Each structure stands twice: as structure tokens, then as C-alpha cells.
Length: 109
Image 1 (spheres, rainbow, N blue to C red):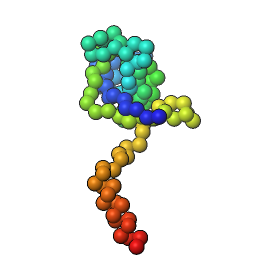
Image 2: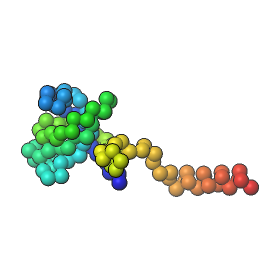
Image 3: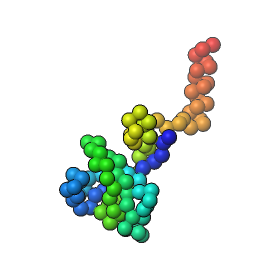
Image 4: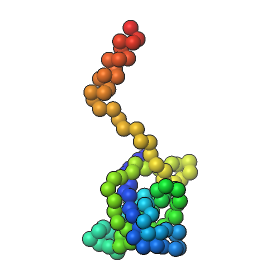
């Protein structure tokens, strides 16, 4: 199972979880209190910090985060029972699939 998570920047230090202003975090809106930029009392579930993959296993309020552009593909790993970064491979476009199939046919004849 894969889905896309958002990137967030921490605005204020949070010593409880070892987060510093400017840290880039990967997460998604908290299921029971998702909030939004217009509802800053909602929460975001934090999965890990970009760069060193520190996993604070916490949630942060919207007013302490700034949502960044770009999303990250994440997948649930049933063996470890935690989220991990998904594969970066994108499916080939129709034109590329056609070129690839033609190249394979000509080399196998």
C-alpha cells in the first residue's frame, strides 16, 4: 500500500522531540484531527526528518509547521510495521513503452 505524504518545515524548536526550526519533516494530516492551514489547531503526524531519517514518532500542530511544495511517496512495510520511503520509479509513458517494446522485438528476432 503506498500513498503520498507532504513535506513540512518546522517553524519553532520543539525540544521534546529533538526538532529544530528549519528541519524538513515528512508527514501527513493526523487522522482524528487533520486540521489545515485555515484550522491551525489540527495536527500532522510526523513520520521522519529528511536528511538523517530521525523518527520522532510524534504529531505537530499546524501552527508550528509550514507546508512545502512537493510530495513524497511512502509505503507501509508490514514486516517492520512502519512507514518507509517508496520506490522512486515512475511508470513509463505510453511512447516510451512502445519504443521499449519495439527495441526488444528487433533484438530478439
